[in-house]
Each structure stands twice: as structure tokens, then as C-alpha cells.
Image 1 (tube, rainbow, N blue to C red):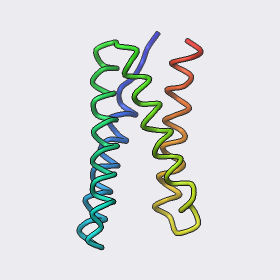
Image 2: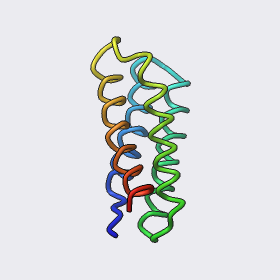
Image 3: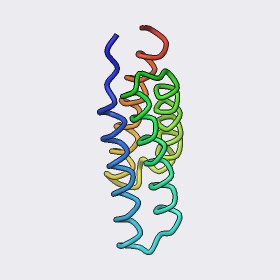
Length: 102
């Protein structure tokens, strides 16, 4: 069973950069904190997946669920929340399949 950490690492980069950009543009400290926190959870989970640990799949799925749930209420506010909701849902689906079906 092949488990790729690449989606988790990609989402980590997306979250951390997104939080940083939101902070620079709008001085949004909550966006910075949320982006870095969720990004670090993805990063830690990706490292665990790379080591072959099942807990990495659980962490990546939890980060995806958290990001999807927080993005959905804002989906009508523009392309960024739509991108976050879609990408986190796709990554969550990927890791849910790996966790529960394989």
C-alpha cells in the first residue's frame, strides 16, 4: 500500500503561505495563526506518513476536515475560500481512502 506524503506537504505549504499573505495584506493575525497551525499539522502528518506511520494519515485527515469546515462558511466570499475548501476536501478524501479502504 503506497501512501504519499506529497498532498500533506503541498497543503502545508499552501496554508502557511496563505496565512502569511493574509497577514501581510490585511494584518490578519487570526489568518496567520490558523494558517501556520494547520500548515504545521499537515507538515507533521506528512513526515509521519513518509515514515510509514498510520497516525500521519489520521493527522492529515483531521487537518483536512478542520480546513474544510472552516472554509465552507466563507465559500461565497471569493476564490481563496473556494480553493481552500476544494483542495482540503480532495486531500481529505485521499487520506480517508488510504486510512479506511486500504
